[in-house]
Image 1 (tube, helix red, strand yellow):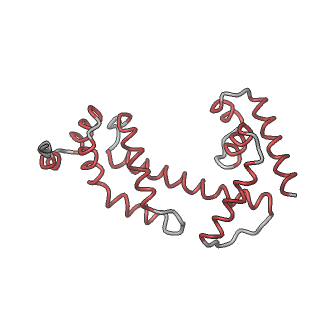
Image 2 (cartoon, rainbow, N blue to C red):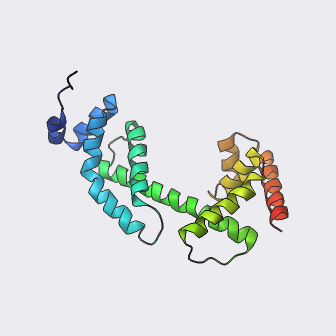
Image 3 (cartoon, helix red, strand yellow):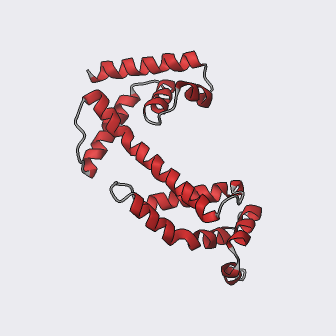
Length: 186
């Protein structure tokens, strides 16, 4: 069975706006690959610069940015340059990765009263297992409320809205989670 002819040369000649229109209209993977490829080097360089003092893998951040951009390209409204929109996604992914990495550090500091220090990859894995073990002792809803508040910094009102729970219940679950974790870690 013969392959359909490649439209790659035509895509290479298309402008950024034309490629965006193609991807928004029909979700064309080849058009999106061409579009993303035009900004890949600059985006990677930016992420390397911004995350140089962290443990985050730039490849993972690039992949997350690619996926989010592809999934949400229909929301791009051309109020800013496509590169600016793409960069905003990358920045959000970097910030999310930093928050997620900090979750385990904050848990350990809060319940084990340890001093922050440079950690090896194996130390971080052990720390993640400790945090996961602590969180496993909570009910599902307690875990959700606790993680939203402690790790993502959501207010109780935001948690209530996001989880579709009454505000009073969010407060109760939060107190129950903190009390349970304090009992376990002492």
